[in-house]
Image 1 (cartoon, rainbow, N blue to C red):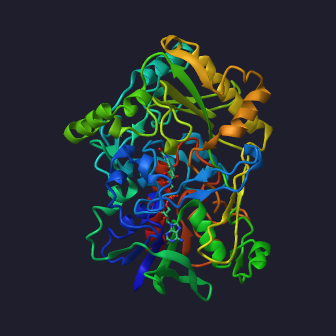
Image 2: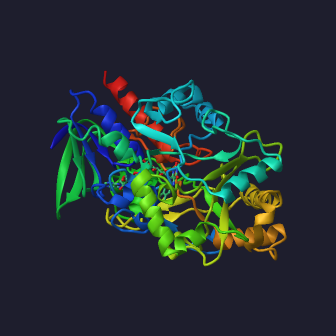
Image 3: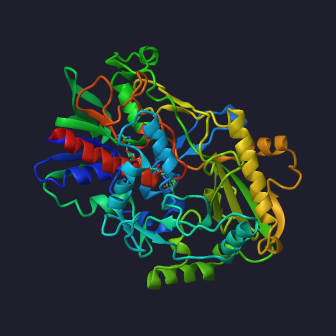
Amino acid sequence: MDFDYVVVGAGSAGCAVASRLSENPANRVALIEAGGRDWNPWIHIPVGYFTTLNNPATDWCLKTEPDEGLAGRSINWPRGKVLGGSSAINGLLYVRGQPQDYDHWRQLGNKGWGWDDVLPLFIKSEDHERGADDVHGSGGPLAVSDARLSRAICNDWVEAAVAAGYPHNADYNDGHQEGVGFYQLTSRKGWRCSSATAFLKPARRRPNLKIITGALALGLEFDGPRASGVRIHRHGRNETIKARGEVVLAAGAIGSPHLLMLSGIGDPQELHTHGIDLRHAISEVGKNLQDHLQARLIFKCNERTMNDEVRSLWRKMAMALEFALYRTGPMTMAASLAFGFMKTRPEVATPDIQFHVQPWSADSPAEGVHPFSAFTMSVCQLRPESTGQLKLRSSSPMDTPAIHPNYLATPTDQETLVAGIRMAREIAGYEPLRSKISDEFQPGRHAASDADLLQWARQTSTTIYHPAGTCRMGNDNNAVVDDRLRVKGIEGLRVADCSIMPQIVSGNTNAPAIMIGEKAALMIQEDGR
Ligand SMILES: Cc1cc2nc3c(=O)[nH]c(=O)nc-3n(C[C@H](O)[C@H](O)[C@H](O)COP(=O)(O)OP(=O)(O)OC[C@H]3O[C@@H](n4cnc5c(N)ncnc54)[C@H](O)[C@@H]3O)c2cc1C
């Protein structure tokens, strides 16, 4: 059980790190994952997220603490717990974010993280169905394709948005995000392409890569100032996996800061409260928690939507047959079909609102679709100012941290979300959508003032599953990792996942997490040389 590199967490980033490091046969790499193998077929069928979410076999099933910004509600925070991590249960949307996000990271002092620096890494990962060009790759491990499903109501939404004055955008990943159109997916020929499918499947047989599943990392081992291994719990007993070179934490925005704190790296006060010996004080571990919060507007329709399709047994059988024969149709459906990246005010430089448009509606996916024809326009603010934090519940690795998201805490966040809700209503007023809508179901026309809309958002909004920022990268004293992702004050230890984002990217976070994994692997090899 001695390796050169030990990677903790086989999620979006971790699979990329382990796969790239093990390309060199001289590197002996261990990849440790708390969840199991990705054998469940619903992981690979895109629409399977309806069964893998809230399922303890594939999801950590986390919940936030009651949040003042959400009218005191506690909400579900799913996180993947299986090979592929959250990329195995996510909505498949392939979104890189805005060039300005990464340029901002670089302006904050993080050398090598500007758009020009990271674009080659997005391209390196990619096998885009449309082929290679200046901004897309082909032949990489991560399959990206256009949707194999369309529904009239989403097409109508895009047309209505264009009629309302928003530009059509055929490729929001090319460095120009603004506009409306259809999402690209991490999918190959109708199947999900998780980070495990992309990066581990081709690497699984390498003799220098050991994938250890069902292994909960408990904390780090140290040899003086150096991280020398990882303690794990597997098959009812504890063991240590030794790292001669480096340990890479890729356990995600909850798991990585949790492991640092359990290992004595964090806020001295907090560690002291739970009786954990301090190894190195970094007060920001677990802080700077950011997420995208979605408000879900639902419009009743006077024509059939997917709600009607999935309520019919015959239609369901036809969907299964279509998938079996052609790998097309509703079973290939990503979390949304149509997108919008828009500005709520002329003075913002880049889009600050994202739309996810879905040809179905539900109170929550677990409860099934509504018994009437309807569709959903989900609105989320892209760059929230409000930050939350994770707090230890105890010194036990079995107790996941308490999540305090602190949503909608600042006036800008409140005003931006309300403005986004008004933009959704505005688009609903344009043809060809207007004539298809029979009623606004949520929030409902009675919610008219800004205060009404904010209150509705507080009472109903949910996460769009993008926690980030809890091991912030930076060159100031409080940052957790430097711009080579090395944990400050500790040797042989890096973090590589969404937790290192200084500011959450303006979009969904799977592709950025994979890019972070690619970059981490590159830097580890450069520094090793
Ligand atoms: C339901 C859902 C829908 C989403 N939809 C989209 C989408 O459509 N598009 C998009 O771009 N993004 C989406 N996201 C977000 C995106 O998938 C995540 O941001 C991204 O996968 C995070 O990557 P990561 O590497 O930081 O962490 P993860 O992929 O979560 O990986 C962390 C891994 O570490 C493991 N781990 C944690 N703690 C331990 C421990 N102590 N010991 C051992 N292993 C541990 C976990 O089990 C997990 O496998 C969605 C997420 C969810 C949950």
